[in-house]
Length: 345
Image 1 (tube, rainbow, N blue to C red):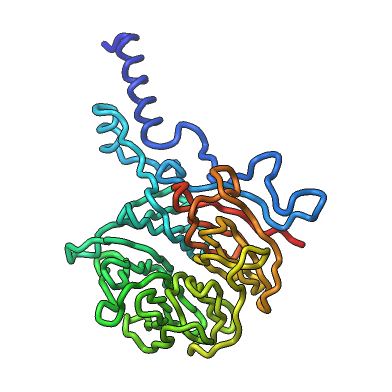
Image 2: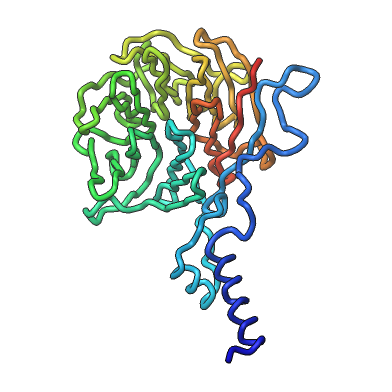
């Protein structure tokens, strides 16, 4: 006969297993804005950008655990969370739920599914036995994650067992990466080659443009790259202190910014992205802020400053803006990805 004490013990173990197998409470989204809202510009001006939250690692999602993981934690204690080391770039799938973060010193890509509260640390390249070394750029190409690896001098295509390297015969030091769904090409900026290379979905390099210099269509250490409507490319021409707008074949359209310390100037532009209205946003690692411009180069707004608070940055790098108008910034030395949203204005 089962005694009340034995029954209580069984129920207690069951409760522990239930709690350990996932969240003991309903999960709270990491992108829940604080109250009161943190916005830019500050009142009484009309707010254009609002802070939503941040990702810092596996603890940012409340993932369910398998029974074996649950037993292991009960016996040996919980495993430490997987945290960002130096997040350098971020990409959001078109579904708005799947997020990939390239971590240079972590030598990995952090994968999040915000809908299913799932996290995974990606390091291996298929069955080849090779691993990511210094991932600096990341982009979604369909269901695959393409990763620019500066140390490997190649792009890793992560798509399960079929994962592979591409571009190792033509790239010197890949930096940024962006996929253009309008023409099906993935553009990679080469910071040492001072050029932009385009790859088709099979991984073949089909186009290369740019030389070292400061003229139109020339580059000096290009870092991140984005693809917007048209398609139009925006390249952070970092050591020329500007953004360049280019056609899909590399034809020069215009430039934004110049070296200086006034509003709208640039010092070390890194991450760049188009918003749903076609405006261009850029992260500046030296100014430690985020600036928005019209396609013609008119400054719309500046967000942030040096620091560790909400909307403050420490050597930020990558940037992306999803279809919902959410702005994702790789706040590298604060070891987090900060997320904002564009407000109707």
